[in-house]
Amino acid sequence: MSQRRLRPTISLGRAAPRRQRASLRRESNQKAGKRRGIMRTSEGDQCRAGDDRASGPAGEPRAASRFVWTVAAGLFAVVLATLSGVAPATAAYPDRVVRIVVPFAAGGGTDLIARRLADEMGKTLGQRVIVENRPGAGTILGSAAVANSPPDGYTLLMATFAHAVNPSLNPKLPYDTFKAFTPVALIARSFNVVAVNPQLPYRSVQELIAAAKAEPGRINFGSFGIGTSAHLAGELFKNLAAVDLTHVPYQGAAPAITDLMGGQIQVMFTTAASVASHVQSGQLRALAVTSATRADLYPDLPTVAESGVTGYVAESWYGLYAPAGTPADVVKVLNQSVRRAVESEAFAKLKDLEGLTLEGGTPEDLDRYVRAEAARWQRLIAAANIRAERQ
Image (cartoon, rainbow, N blue to C red; front, side, top):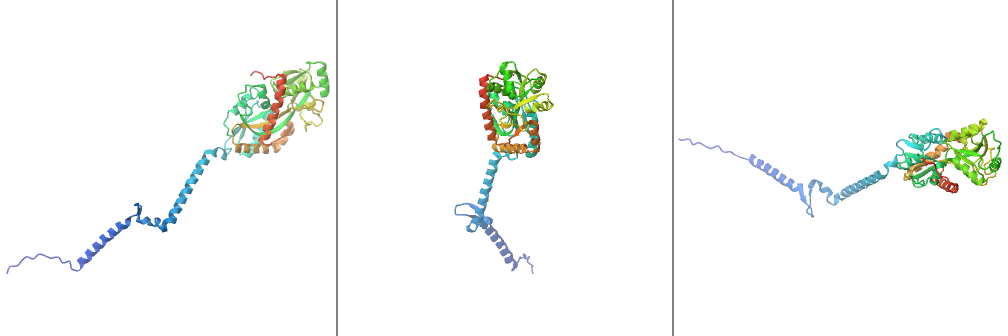
């Protein structure tokens, strides 16, 4: 009997259907996952199924919340950008050294006051405040330097009597006195003293006037230069007392006072500080003060007006200016600093030393005062035909 070779048969039995069913389930799940992965909205846009919580009615609050935060962040960025364009220059003022330009040489009365002011302002501003001396051309060089400086509050001008009279003395100034600067504060006012050589017989203003009228032009009065307070105070005396005195200008107060003590000139209308020690020592004789009222430093001395020259007032003054265009908030900071300095113990001592009347008012106070002074002296300068020396 021949044996036939049988092919082996593979029986799937009951296990095969189970494997097939598992495979079918996997394929079904994959297809369902693909259907859930991407769905179409009514507008035809597509979004992931995992994000469907943000697209239906239940997702609207969260979407709105994200929109509000986005808008708020945008507005905040706009505010910061706007502020960054205007605030940094002044928000932290001052953040570096501040300069006070003194248009005189070091060592004089204006320099002394400026240095005391710088010390006191440095305490309140929290930054160093330094003095830079830039003398020349009757204060014009230093003033022009400040006028041409950036209006950021870091370069200031210590202005004096010359600031008010220079426009009348010099019609071709390189700046406009009332447009090139921003007033900060009037620091102090000071009086001058009518001082004579003690060898002369004059013991009152009236005796000086009588001698001048007896010999017109014979009595010489000295000053620290054309257009200075000592010069114009003398010219005002000539005008109101109707006397003829001969003006002798010097290059500074020291040589003029030396000649007054030596007898080369007979009288000066000079600052109180420049002659105080000489009057106390008897090297000079004081006849009167040029202020509107008697001075604390010389309570026994009459004013020139009291002595018979009606309407006579001649003052020196000290004021702080910034370049035109300096921001108002910077000017406010500087003004407050000056006012605190003027109220300090250091300035109380300086008041007695220099014969000062301390001020420390508003920027508007300084502007009004200087404009009035400029107008008053302009009339005298025009009447006497006074012109500044060529530099």
